[in-house]
Image (cartoon, rainbow, N blue to C red; front, side):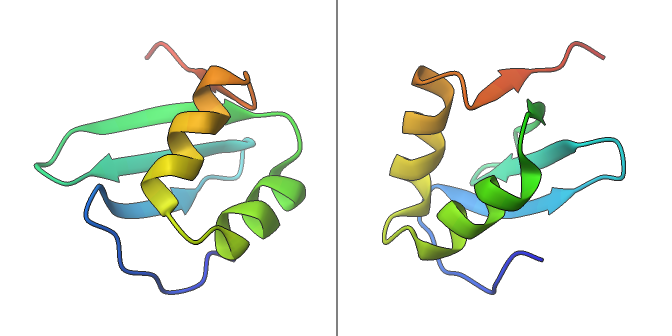
Length: 69
């Protein structure tokens, strides 16, 4: 789903079957976020020039919501 990418801020991103994404930031911090429209999110992420800036914007605009585990 997610295309290969290079980022100084994001180490990896994966989606789970329950509509969440797991984002691992450089340095090892890992967070799970809820996504209302996973297909749209993946497309926008893959098209983003800066993956870190995209994740930041998605959090500010509530496209991603923090999932408490």
